[in-house]
Amino acid sequence: MKASVFIGTSLDGFIARPNGEFDFLPADGGEPHGYNEFIASVDAIVIGRNTFETVLPMKPWPYAKKRVVVLSTKRLDFSAIVGANVEQMSGDPAEIISKLAASGATHLYIDGGITIQRFLRAGLIQRLIITRVPVLIGSGIPLFGSLEKDIHLRHISTKQYPSGLVSSEYVVDEAEERAGSK
Amino acid sequence: MKASVFIGTSLDGFIARPNGEFDFLPADGGEPHGYNEFIASVDAIVIGRNTFETVLPMKPWPYAKKRVVVLSTKRLDFSAIVGANVEQMSGDPAEIISKLAASGATHLYIDGGITIQRFLRAGLIQRLIITRVPVLIGSGIPLFGSLEKDIHLRHISTKQYPSGLVSSEYVVDEAEERAGSK
Image 1 (cartoon, rainbow over the protein chains, first blue to last red):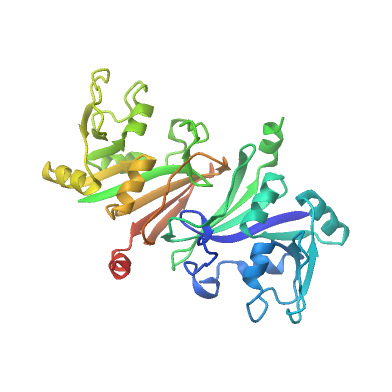
Image 2 (image 1 turned 180 degrees about the vertical axis):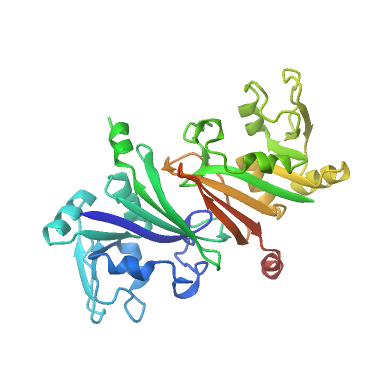
């Protein structure tokens, strides 16, 4: 089982404005920078309730037929979503990973600020693909949050695009992780 | 007159740990990634009191004979620094730029978190060279801070290094700045 993050941020590290808007990101995902290839490689998308509420009004449903798992302890109503493959789970990141592995998933897309931070803190993210948009917005919802200890990464490659997007891929350095854990 | 930033950060955007340490940055500046060429191009380095107090104990003085301007309203004692070209100024960023321009400077290196944030907010930074170190540290002194309005940047180029450093150069997009300013 592998869990990956694929996300766009402002240069100052925000994934949305304080009110949840992401107007500073290029419309329609911007210049192609690997999203279609990435999404084709995942079995399931794991998002939190905030991200779910952001995407819920979108027509069409942005995840098409891909399996979507919404993490929430509050009962969610999926009846308004047409043609989607969406389900609800709750539990800590390790439990979610176990349940999804048991159901046959091998590559998860972990999305949304709080959810990414929870899985990172639990040591359950193996790969991060972060695309920087060339703007500073000053405040908003940050991609990263507090950690109990450093997470060492290995840089795989960075691609730059004519529109100014810079996309860097990192893997969590497991040797360093082990050495660093007490 | 041009003012530039050249700085290393963790992938989560911190320039130092909460206590001011920067042990997560590679020792001795890491793999060469353009610092020597950059420093040779500047006439003066502008730092705040926090950065000054961080570099003060370093032997040798890290800025060699380069002109260093420390911003502080509190009287500073430079008597312990041997062989340095260091002076004190106070005032808002526009005043500092004016004074330095009047003294013949044409390219300033603006350094230190608070100082960079003040000059950015004042619209007085033209170029940013940001080198990401492949580690998440979770908390610390952030490179960027709040802004009154978005700052649109133009990506010039990104270089990646075998050690995992990724260095991106941006210029402040003046056309966008003008269009965005009311």
